[in-house]
Image (cartoon, rainbow, N blue to C red; front, side, top):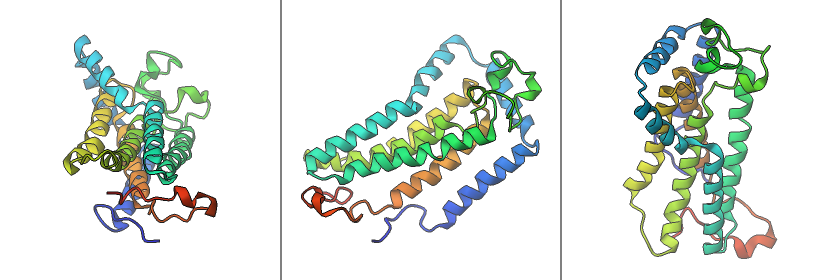
Length: 245
């Protein structure tokens, strides 16, 4: 099996993403960048009229993990039925596994509170809402880093885009490459902006989610989904889908 191409090509960019995530985490663990996070959060608090708040809140639904997972799974099942192939289902299943076992554990390990932790439970002093490793707090109060909204948006819109193109072709339609690019890029950027603007995450939480999400997205797009060996009993449901035309 040969890995599928990604852009930019090569593993150097993947390594850069991981180094960036590790470096950002170390910086925060040593008390760096708190001033930037505080400044962005304070600016957002002072520039959030009611209309802008509700617009941002509605747009932020683009990053809800559970609906995105269900949409990805639904598209996979629909394409599987259309092509009589089990392969499209593998993509959302693996997407669910990699997001569950990376984003969640990182949130629990880093144990960072959201900017709002000073005005609602657990009502910490403002300066204590910034550090990582609040191990003395219940998990539900300290799951801000990295932003799951941003990371999930990048992964799941990548999954959706990878399924939509062959699904459109199965109906005799062509999905423009530019539209596929828009689907992959615009919603995650909207989610990153709104989740930071609403004060639900620190800026560095969102940047960490961006780095992690891009890394996972590249891994999923490298997988040769059409070439993964399947059991003999599935040979009648073994048609390719990423190269389907």
